[in-house]
Length: 438
Ligand SMILES: *Cc1c(COP(=O)(O)O)cnc(C)c1O
Image (cartoon, rainbow, N blue to C red; front, side):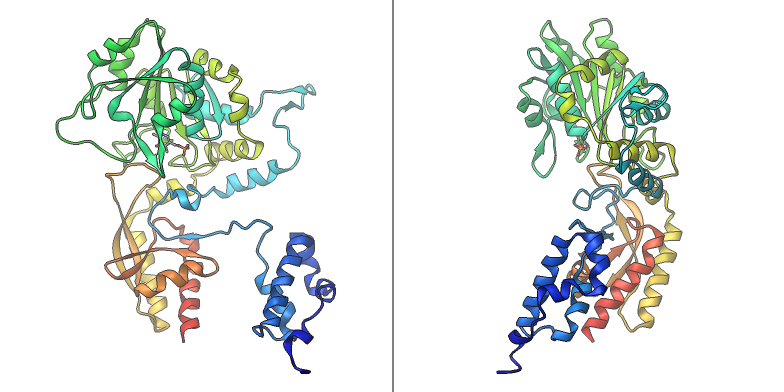
């Protein structure tokens, strides 16, 4: 049959040679372009695309970049969402990543032409932000920081830690399993709900490599409970030479007025911890990283351990971390600080725009959360655009994808986890879903 679509499928060479696709070939690479071309040819064969529309279909199907990771609008109300890549970087951090992505002086002293200290600028920024620290180290993430501590301080000797702090952080990540996987020995003290200074004292001995305190980020124990604060523990360890390491998780540099129960790096060191550990991509608002700060002697021991080489970070992480610390407030901090009236005004404006297009949209109050294991008991007041529940799936499958959630039979698009600059894109995504339905 002459009009059999299979006979009219444009040839691969013809499509690849089309001038409208030249830019894409240069930007994304010929291999990727060819994959998309072949998928479109299949759609022509299947009768889904008319042969003259093949180039347009290729253009429409091309990804924005050569990576399959796509930007997503986070309307979950969870500011630091692990499944969505945790903290979005600030524009200053993004610019620093781009600048450092090529050849860069990460480990070269341009003044002398000799090898320099790796990531000096990021380390200096950390020390300026946390004056109680004498030295700092950056590794892949907080789990890597824990693994380094366990390897360097807990092998042969043992790590003493409270039973109530043997926590699972998320998705099967259990801190005690990580620690013992390095070959470290754990000495658990106290019970699930209570631990005393005497429990710690009873466990200390010639075999003690370090005492570890882990902030149970994502849960709280209430009722008949007792913990030993960093200050008490530090006083009891004074003169023993046993380092006190505190994993504070969230990465807050200093106390935050909105998160009174969240420990921070500066206060924990000031209270007497020898070393503190935290994530870079939670409340700090920077790239994925594990921050290790504290007494120079202990930090040096960790840096000199051979395992450090396997855990250190790359130039782009160092660039993003330094820019996060030195540059303007990162998005996570801005979202945390956003005032409720402003969020409600955004929700009303969005609902008004969508309503004018005939969409059932109303502004509603909602709770947001820090996420990433931080401040589990501390809902943040927020506002949302509330839509029919049937919006949730198509919004998530759209371009850009919008991830909200369904509650009480409504799709909620929570605005505290989105910068105001994303409101136009959010409205456009909802309008596009509605348009496809009608
Ligand atoms: C989140 C968290 C971790 C794990 O941090 P990553 O940076 O994801 O490796 C470890 N400890 C605590 C207390 C945490 O909150």
